[in-house]
Image (cartoon, rainbow, N blue to C red; front, side, top):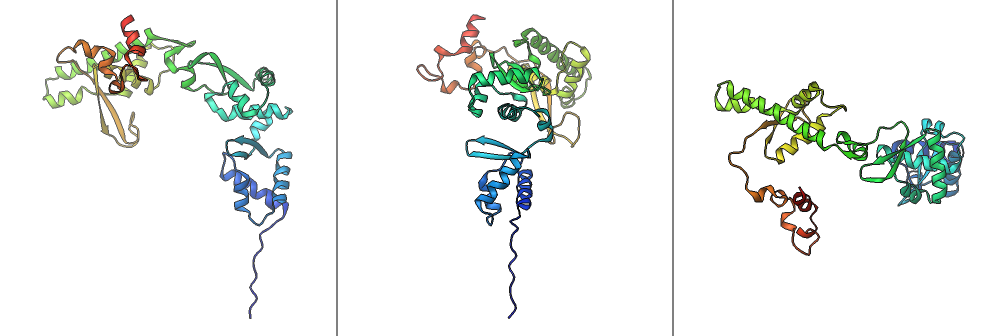
Length: 314
């Protein structure tokens, strides 16, 4: 009778370490001990622990904490070189800030994730700022609070407010100028279509403009000191839609067409209302998306409506 040979999985420490690194590459966000255990059931707990400790000691793995427990993640070589010579606490804070990306993180959240005293965190943050490893950025969401992010990152729009904010102040005049110029461009497009004396359907179709055309017109005017994106212009066009001055339609577009997204393109045209809106429509209630949920004593009510207060003050 032929002897059946069962292949034994390697328990060599080097092989275990290499397999752990391969798992970390497969799961860049990090792996738990359970993932390692499931992948290498033949390896004893003591062998796993020795391999993990070895990788941690030589700086090839990062040890992180989340709601599910401990995570092991492959160390970024670039990040490791930046914090070379720092103590473990500083490396931990750097890792937490790096994970936050360009949206940044408050010192309170750093304290929660690191379990370090606030005084120690403040000391580490000042030290890292002096080394230009990180920077503090004021957030428009909370003017008195700062978020921390890596020094070379460009802050997210949710932090800076994008093109509509300057030093945390909303540029209402700038927005109004853009509003007027976008509407002026669409009006001129509609007038040119009417003057063409073509059939009504052709006139209507030729009165539409893409957001890319409007963006290009605004850029050529040179009225903005900051670089505006098409997304910024579409935000302005949306306010014109809410004001009843512009209408939008979406058409299918070929892949790669300028201004198209996922095979679709937004078209805009200026419109003139047939009749003037009534006074009720001009109030916040006339356009309120949660009108049906608004009642006295509820979470949304007329007495605590900030939009109504602003409208009355205006």
